[in-house]
Image 1 (cartoon, chains in turn brown, yellow):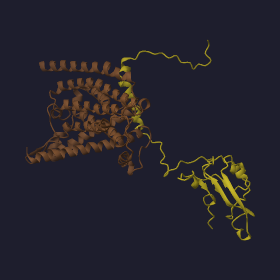
Image 2 (image 1 turned 180 degrees about the vertical axis):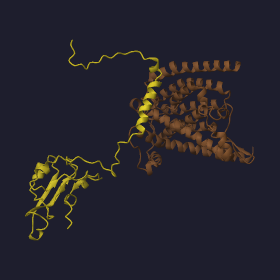
Image 3 (image 1 turned 90 degrees about the horizontal axis):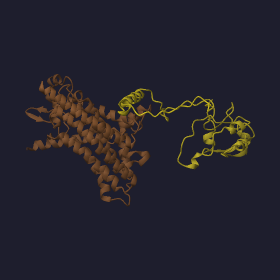
Image 4 (image 1 turned 60 degrees about the vertical axis):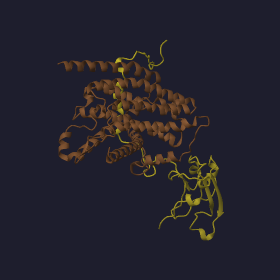
Length: 345
Length: 165
């Protein structure tokens, strides 16, 4: 391992980290703007032109707020939980391939921090870890509402992970690989997995709504019943971390969905473009395409949030266990049968 | 029993059909409705820069009027203060000196005229009570401020600007 390899990876990690933080920051702004436009309003427009400095003002406000730690809480866990939430949210970006390899002379620079051969499992594990931040925070607050919110989050995540895992199994049957890089390479051009796995994609997107605790599955933090849920007792930047973690999760889920089902950095006519603009700009155009897809998904997350009312808790569990899991199992079986038939003939 | 109106509606709770149970058709319909609002014109008025047009009988900040020669109309009769249900108006009367003929229309005038804008309910009774047509509530929205004392508006803020010759 030479030093240039380390520098290259380090730079990549820093860039990805910065990008995901900036996107999370501007997701808060986008959320408010999208909400406003969907409700015939304007949204924040005071801080800077079109209000683009609003996230900075919000961040500053969060930092300046008084930090309150409940006297009866478990101090260490209370401090640790928001950090854990944001940490698990951030590390998910490590295995996502952000673009095809850049060729500079004889040197090949992959736009992916690490291509582990069980990338899908890694993502799955990291996303599930996210619930620990919520669970620990809710428990350490020593507040019944927080605890209820945390328990809701935990049970919801566990329920929806099953359906999510099953929809990924069907995807793996199609792609024959667990490495995200290979999955993306297999979707060259417009052979996107969503065309082969439409039901799987719908299941996956519903489950990722539940995993990121977004509306209509935002029961862990419903204001009306639980006064904010697991982050009721949090203030200042610790609350900011939780809110931030939610947006980073949204970004990571959007990236995963774009990678698994919508071809990642592939787009129709990419070979022609690659041939004409060279091996450095070409992959970067792919990256731009990937980010465009991610933004579409983030917009979709917001669009859904301002359309659908929150599910009742029993409806949530019914949907998870009685609808999504049977559908996911059926999807796996049908996919398996079709693949067996196709291979036979 | 015969229903009194024909508004009675019998609710039937049918079990959900399959399409209703998977929610997706209803969700797509809802998404269609919300996205149509995305392209509609927003109803917001950016307040301090753009102001909504008020109705013709809008009552805003008071102004003490001058007559056609630019003299103050108010004679400090006190009827406005008397009529004020919120007791927001106070005044001190004074006698006009001969050299002040250009300033005040009649021999008596208000040397101090104060309206407490926090007490005022903008009912317009002072306007109706005034026999000299000296006070009208035809101004803008009373601006906000930080201190209570700054809401007591004296003659410097209430009296109309003198006519420009």
